[in-house]
Each structure stands twice: as structure tokens, then as C-alpha cells.
Image 1 (tube, rainbow, N blue to C red):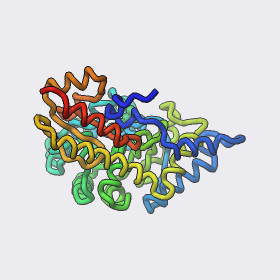
Image 2: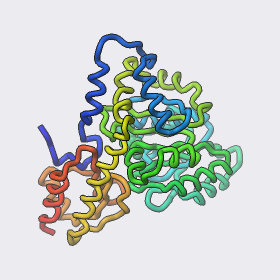
Image 3: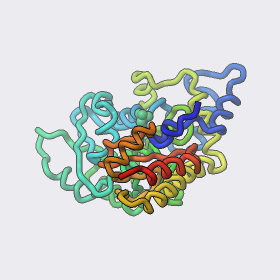
Length: 344
Ligand SMILES: *Cc1c(COP(=O)(O)O)cnc(C)c1O
């Protein structure tokens, strides 16, 4: 049964894209070595290396929370701190997992326009205290796209990379929607990762069209030296790793990952354009990836709720509509129809 009313609740209400499904099916033949010692996992790892045009190390885990928390834990000791945006997923939606897996590393929250970290705020946070009584700043974590659907430019990321180097901080990128960011910017993936000073990236597969699975990509390979142990201890080392790796081989080939990201972004732009014409609706942030945020009159919320539409209202202060690879023109039109005809 298809429930279009769930289409915009999140980009994880969508199913598995046919290409990922075919890749999983294709490796469901015979026997293969376990725990990542198989040829499909090596092939996926090599695909990341060519994509990023560098010799990075890659690990496959099940969820974005695991990718983020384990990546941060590998950068930090328990007495360290991570500077991040107050709206960051690691702060608001991971149930304390980053602190838990790092045995107490503290998140230091900063404000910044449009969900982005502000280099000056980072400097201020680092230099505010240098005494032994305060957790020592060790890393920066930023989301790209941000939780508000905006995307950092390569220049903005370089500026954060500079501040990081100035203060001896490592940089983690939460790329739960990394494909959507690259599709939006139209730059080579290296331009917004290692070239801009990102040391480790959580590259999202779930919101791209996989059943589950995120890749942790270490550009600074020394930081990931013992990462496999960390994954195993956290219950994130898949014994049938090939099934986590296979969808990546399909999506990273021929730029399909970027097309999937672009498809989601295009639907968000279409939804935004439709909402722009509706009186009483106020759009909240630039639509640079696959999210549209809008303030709606209370009565419109009531109508949408009565018709079964689901969407979050606790992020960014308005209604959040997420698009995915699967969002169709009909889905967008159905939502627009219900919003524009709702009594106000
Ligand atoms: C979805 C998402 C994640 C990952 O969430 P999981 O539910 O743990 O897979 C991480 N960061 C951001 C910004 C997200 O939107």
C-alpha cells in the first residue's frame, strides 16, 4: 500500500531505489567471505577512492547516528569537546550517542545563520576558555546539507577548515544527504571534503535510496586506524558486509548517486515554487537541497492533519517537507493542492 501522505515526512519514508535493490540481489549468489573480506566490499571501497580522487579509508555502518558518533569518538578523548551548530543532528536527534560512544566528549553548541557554523563563533568558542577546567576543543562537526536544507559553499567550508587548522581542530562532516549537497553545488566531491579540510565524512546511503547503510570516509587515514575495532564493539560490524556495500557499487557507478540527489532537490524546488504562489504561506529558508520549510496558517496545518499529511514542525520553526529520490510530480501536486485549497 502506498501512503502519499508520508511522502514529505522525511526522506527515509521512501523505499529502496531499483538500482540498490538490483545490486543487493546480484550479490545474493553463493558464498562470500564475511566481515568485509569480500570482493564487493573492496569494490565499493575502491569506488569511494575514485569518487573522492584520493586514497581514503572507508567503513560501512548501519545508521547515520552510528556513523557520526563513531567518527567523532575516533577523533576525541573523553575530556575533549566538539564544536557544532545548535541545530545539528548530533545534538538534537542522536539521543546522546556521540557523547556515549566517546565516553563523555562534550558538544559545544554555537549559533549561526541558516543552520551553518560561523567561523567567528567557532574561534570565539575555542578561545573563550583555555583552562584545565573546561573540556578541550578537539573537533568541529558540521552538517552539509544543514538540518535547515541549506548547503555550504566550498569557500565557506574552506573558511571553517582554516579556523580548524589555526586551532588544531579536526573536522567531521555529517553528510547524511551528501549526494544532495554535491548535486546542488555541482562541484567535484573533493571540493567540499578533503580539499576544504574535512578529515572524516559520514556519507549517507539511507536517504539516497538504500535500505540502510552509511559510509564513514576517513580522508585523514591515521584517524581511522582502529576504526574497525570501534565498529565491532558498537555492534556495527556487519558479518554480511557485502549487502551493506553492494548498493554503493551500483550508486557510485556512472554518477547515479548524484542524479538521485538531483532528483530529490528538483522536487523540493518544484514544491517551493508552488508554495510561493499560495497566499498566507511564508517560506523560511533558501531551498538548496531537498528540504522546504514553510510557515503555514494554523488552519492549513489542521486541514493537512485531517487529510493525513505527515511532516515535522519541531525543526527550524515551521513545517518541514522533505523530498526524496522517490517523490513524484503527483506527490508534489497533491500536497500543493491540499495546501492551496485549505480554508485559512
Ligand atoms: C537522517 C540524518 C542522520 C542519520 O540518522 P539515522 O536515523 O541515525 O540514520 C544524520 N544526520 C542528519 C543531518 C540526518 O538528517
